[in-house]
Length: 349
Image 1 (cartoon, helix red, strand yellow):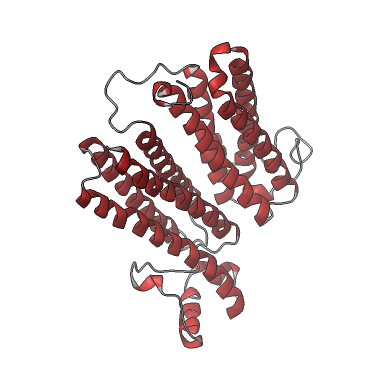
Image 2 (cartoon, rainbow, N blue to C red):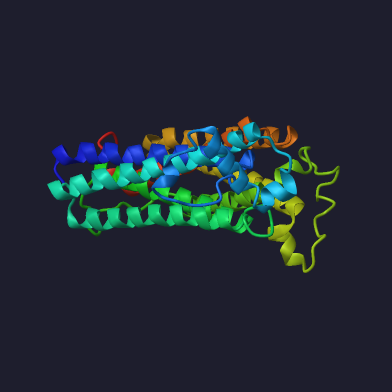
């Protein structure tokens, strides 16, 4: 890929990263306002047009009344209240459509103009496939709350959120690849320093992401609003209330929140130890800015998590907590990329 082609493709991929982040944030608001089930059908084209008059609003509201969320939770809701939750779900889907257009239209144009080499083209097809999978999983998740129970499955929510972060990661990684090398050959990558530390942080982060989604899906953050103890105990009083015991680890809200707290504390400790290890190594000064950012973000994230629980998950703190998780993931990926391809970074050489 020539330098002339690199810049527009790099900007295009970064626009995708930003829009995916916005999707995650709006998705968090949708979850916290219980808006996700306000649109009970999926129409890719016509669904992009919201109700335009009172007749259409009444029709949409009557449609919503046919499903469990209204019947079991929101019975008696006013039309104005319905419009509020409809807005967030509609906005979430609208950004998803915009994201699809931003990915597909420039992709076709760049492809026709010959901007991509074969390797990058294959990777971009994977990116588009991931985007399509994420959209499909979103609808599968919504469908889980339209029959019998008025809640989306927390398992499907975790898959939906995980796919969003995988899509974010893949898009960001491609953007960094385009900027710093366009056709990496075997053997050009550097040996990653602190590889075991990086893997450990990555594994702990993904456990935290999954349990964060479980916590949100089970409304577990509304329980035990104290810190560090839960209900006055180090283990929540409901820790082993389900039978068999293993169900508690994935379906018991109190236990899920406790595991989210525990893993978050371990992750904070490992990141702090990793930063100290980097600081003591004279050969990693070029990476310290990202390492310090990683530590600063995880400390801030931990504090926001505490306040989110103490104040019973206000929307502002809940969304901020989720957004910071995405930022932490982005910094970790950027650090990993810089470690792996140090020879391609001009500021290092």
